Length: 118
Image 1: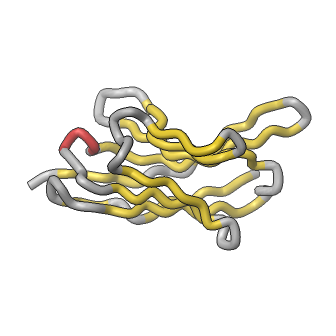
Image 2: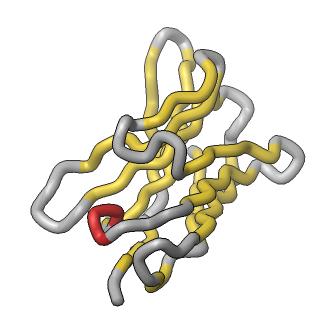
């Protein structure tokens, strides 16, 4: 099992910045990718940014504003979010994906709320 804990969410004004962090613990040796997803009220959970063997990927809506990074010494995934807009308001979830014996397993954090508003 992999345990993920997010932190760093909160309320920010439009144009502001926030940094989310996600620390992993447990059986992390087989994790081959990490990602941030978000789910707005009434919407589906969608990928925001990912990092792994395939490189770094971003959703079109956040390119140039968000930066995903990984500190492997601390098993901590970060998401630097700049130029935030109300459309970025959502619960942000940390994801870790492992590939083990040909099976793909996804692990999720509990989520952290990001609200962009005046």
